Image (cartoon, rainbow, N blue to C red):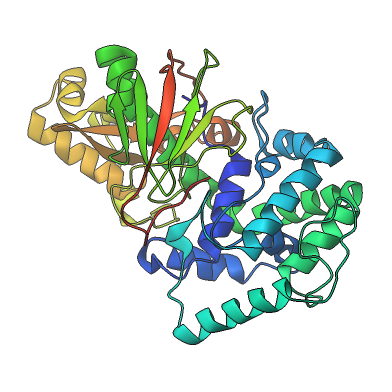
Length: 393
């Protein structure tokens, strides 16, 4: 398991969600608030992160150091040859939107018949255009489109990779500050709750139980981990290990790197027990958080526990433990997810800060523990029969 939420992965996937007209209950409030803080940083991101389909692997580099700045530093160090190659691949995907590789189908809005005809006419016009000459290293399709078209931007980006990466890093930093950072405590809470679920499965039954406990779009049939995926792909680990990265902004289907030579990473959606609120629910319930019993309950939940374990640790009845956990949850101090026939309670960053005296340093680092496990020998992607939802890479 990854040590926690990856800020760069969440930033890139959140940009998908930002442009998604669907899931208004889950992301509508966040989308409205975040858009009001966005400026021109979305221009370069729109060219690199389409509404559906492939986005370059170099946008989410594998790095041994946690944090947004470490990821941006690794991105900025990407070799120019790799950047140009992946931009060319992205340009081909835009010119032929057949979704034959990675596709974010949950982001797909319904197209009208008129729109389909326009796209077909545009492709035919490009294919039959008079003898065009492409500059070396420039993505296919450059120079034949409008200045504000994403493909035109890709051509300009490929022509000046060093400057491109610098502008991209600044755009990602600004976008993260506007759209992700204000909600990071909530995002981290959901990811940490997911990690607690998987950690409990690992303790109960080892790696097999951990992999079998993953969300329904992932199926463990040892030694193969299968996934609902828009295309048929097979990724062999060859002893490299598999990093499991739960993500708040990933939706419906998991995401992997397109390049099989990169370190294997499987980004999958966290389990949402309810519709995201993106806000710490501070209100009248906090006034009820008094007394030794409830303080003991909060301490007992610090490293995650079920309701029955909570009752045993605090020496109260099962009904009383459930009631205390409910009050803490309503106050925004505890997150609760179902684990088999039981429920698992974990602290939110607000709850962890309250338990430790409100230290901002503790709030920023709550739940930073790491769990590692032996990986499966291979993963295999299976086409998803439903072409109306999901995302893949």
